[in-house]
Length: 553
Image 1 (cartoon, one colour):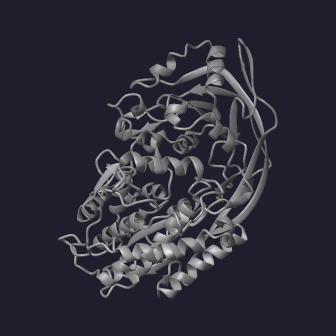
Image 2 (tube, helix red, strand yellow):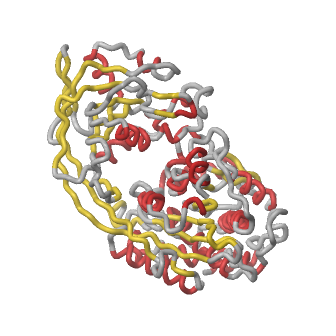
Image 3 (cartoon, helix red, strand yellow):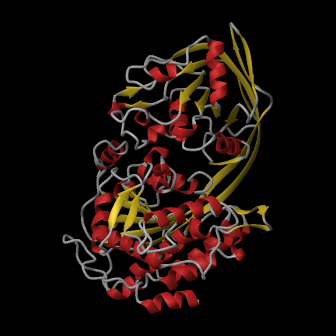
């Protein structure tokens, strides 16, 4: 606890609280509430959540039981109400599917046969809950990016009938190659592999294979291969996954070269497909593959608590953070517990600390606040995906989501990064709050990698709820940007998703985390005390979804 005491003694953690509210909001906060957001309140919670005793907080383990019971007890002590009727828990039913190719992916055409090796040349998985799936002599269609985006006047499936067929598409979206298309280097959801699988299913395809390319994918083939070699968790569905394509997977670039050569098609078509007006076509080839499946069903839990509003209790602001990590796994240098201190004991501690701060307000917010701790983010954002389709409060009455995932533990910064900057008016709320701290909001350095679609806030955006996802700034006070970037790179290289993401009271610096969480408290205070609903900005792929939802209010 000495690290906490020394930080508190400096006085740098308790920032000025005057002007904490927008001019259009009632000042409901007070210094006592704000001061609960401090190094001690954050640190003690991180220390518990990241301890070996919690066994890495993996879903379906004793670590989950300890974690969710701890969260429930914390919310109870604050006097918050259960978020799911009489319960603080929301069941999230899942199914673990292990897909293993029974043999090679065979591609046949008039010029011969191509045999592709699992994991080396391609990956394939399924969401179908059955013992085996297969495609036999399925016609292969090349469909550009595999995108249907009316707001961008783009439809790669126009004029195509892909029912029962195998579709091959490129990764990312046209903006990666032409800044005048879509949102330029700011990847839209249409560029994500998850969208491409979903669209192929809507089109009735039997299989969807994405051409891997390191730059637009933002990760090498090794990442795809590693993912394809493991079982995958999915949400249980009433149709047992049958609404999805039978096969979902990837092709290496080398395999793609061979594919087009066998079809007698010039690879120049890949350049043409990146431009407006491209028309998909059949490659004149057939694909065959069988997957053998192993299935296991389990239930995990989101944890939810509510602070009721005083005037508009039927309207809700959500703060979210995922509680899960990877549990006990492969030992590295003698350590097998993946503690997940930064990822995401910090965000979970931030959630609890914000809940405590709001619970101590002398004047309660006019809107209700839902504090939501989500399961299985590390398995594919599953807890938030389930919440999006099974919301505990009406989506049309949900004002916004503020998500926390890996908070700053190295220094105060002059900046705060907003992932997905430019998507919604939530940016403007963050800017105003940052300005009160003498700070600035900056976009993520490389939005082409689609970071906006890789944390839980995305599943709120997907159902139309404006979402704010901040990341630690890099312009470290007293150290500069290069030092801040080096700190972030060091975490990614040496601790991220490894047993070495551990809490260390001797080296962690809480001043930046405190300032960031207080900024989010400011944003929430404003939103919880006004009647306005933030909007998506023109060009956002989520704007139409929200407008349709709000039209029924």
